[in-house]
Image (tube, rainbow, N blue to C red; front, side, top):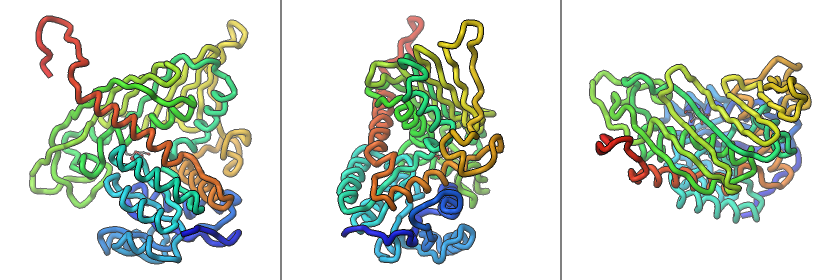
Length: 402
Ligand code: SOE
């Protein structure tokens, strides 16, 4: 099926899922064309979810014209142009394959799927669909933070010189409380992995994108710090409340992922992803050290990029705090006067603006499913490495106790 659009016509959106990502994506679909000149105007048509009353509420709250309990309705509806997948990772492959085969454009949340095999199937289908005019994008939204998009420009133009070392952390603490209840993010069958895939995927994608280099080798450790949690209550998602039964269920994913990586150039990277870093709310940090300087970023200060220029005059060297709200910084000119700052939700609006522009221009947006497949390969390699306990060397003659 060939996918075409009348110029400047509507782009009719179908969404599957209505949780945190459904809310963030819906906000972006509603706002992108009001702040960016886009070739097509998104229209929120149908949202799909398993629970009729909940998805009807979501349709009203997010601004969709109608709701359904069958995601297949979006695929079968000729009045839907885009299928936006905002569900847990175990459902991505089935929905994406069906939508691509039906000629829909597909935006799929990260990680792309729960396995390399499923990600590869999605990538193959996306390539075939592209030849028929259907575009696909994986939702690594942090790339569209102005400070990080600017950091990539700096690295690409040689501002840090030859890259010597890369380090990245993604620190959250919403699971620090041992009685925080079960949620789909803690179930391997649904989420694929824990901190590793949920937030580690972001820093894997970002460091490869910023450096222009793929990760070739890893050595990692995964740890489930809190092995059981109260059964989920009514409020699912981040920080919901447990039910009154007192029953505890097994957590089947990691709370902490630590790994070292060797990029294809041989550069070493160190990575940490955790959801029990008490006090760290959404501290997604990346630092790149080069022969001529460094860049450093922390999402908890998302409008700032720290830049160190080792070529500056001796005595004048030091990290400079660049406030990335100037018109010269990516996306910033479309918003507020300098210094007024942007938020987490703006990265999703930028993502939608770039996707709609690509659809209108007939080009393939990035990150592609193939780029997301590479992230999946790194996730799988870390899991494989962590499953081999032989890496640990004891510091004395005693056998390791864990
Ligand atoms: C939870 O850890 C989460 O919602 C991730 O799933 C998102 O990808 C990230 O943007 C914010 O934190």
